[in-house]
Amino acid sequence: MGYIKRDIEKLITEASQSYSAVLVTGPRQTGKTTTLMHLMDERRRYVSLDDLEARRTAQNDPELFLSLYPAPVLIDEVQYAPQLFSRIKIAVDSGAKPGAFWMAGSQAFRLMDLVQESLAGRVAILSMPSLSQHEIYGRGEATPFEVSIEKLRERALRGAKADITNIYERIFNGSMPGSISGKYPNRSMFYSSYIQSYIQRDIGDAADRIDSLRFADFVRAAACRVGQLLNIHDIARDVGVTDDTSRRWLQLMEKSGVVFFLRPYSNNLLKRTIKTPKMYFFDTGLVAYLTKYSSPTILMNGAINGAILENYVVAEMMKSYVNSGRDFLMHYYRDKDSKEIDMVIESDGELHPFEIKRAASPGTELANAFKVLDAGSIPRGIGAILCMKDEVSAIDRSTLIVPIWTI
Image (tube, rainbow, N blue to C red; front, side):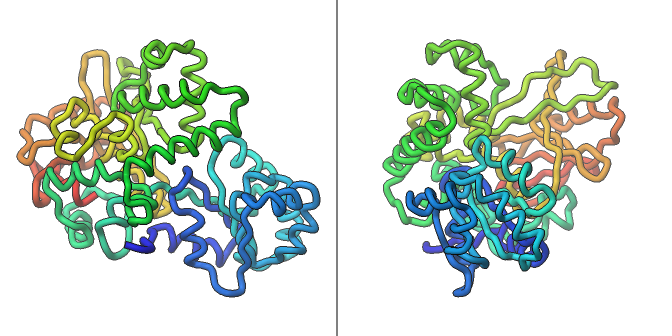
């Protein structure tokens, strides 16, 4: 497949016209460096701090490093030399041109704190997730998901239709550029290497004396619980670690961009809501690998088929906003009376509720749960049932039926 055009390219270009320093962060192997190298011209130098000699110079003499690699420059794996940030700050304050410093690095652990401490207000920080459904299968300009018939019809023109079998193939294949592009055609080997590299480099850099085999078991135990209410004790018990260790390891997984959490929606008028977050992985292909599913068909009929579909939809929805540079507030809803809504997005002063279903013809009663939000202080806007239907349709004026392939 070769290079896959990224939706975030437009944001990088725009930021480089206004900011002297641009930092692209994100989980391991999501294509940060590949994208920046694709966008750079012949004037821009490239240096990676994976090179131990370059790293040593950047750490010990950042002024000399920036003389050896003058702007415009792309500094890769910048998290290995935070000493550079103060020198880059001086260069920016001295009038460095827009786009002078491109940086890429994992959003792991201390990087964001160090950048914001040294370059606050001077750097554009962009987050690059793994590939979106639009990037792999779609065409045209990326836009955030919006619940209106007009916007959804526009999305449909930029998407690629997919039935339930195709959707589970997408879920199984995942969203990592190295695998999707065909660079690493052996999927199992790719994910096995990914886990080893992740534990050795990201986790190893963050935590001393961590038991790598037990941590790998922990990641697998977490993958078995995607789309569920987070139960730290259950994961700890399965792996044989303490609850405190379980909590700390989940924080490492979140900070390194492997998992994310949906917090429950609540306000002062909805007093019976549950406070526990739900856990999701950014890449469903990694979940399928860790949970030992050997094909999309087996996954589609397996025990986690509903949970991994929900994970896929929530992650794709999030990517549509991140790649468009749009802020969003995404939650789920569940109360002590067992009323539940899979996803609630707060946007433009309204709450938009969503249910996620495998069915092609979901029942109209699914929208009844949305009414619980009417008791809150923020008005309820248009909601949707996200399902396997071929085309956009509606239950009524306040509830649309939306094919998952359009996200």
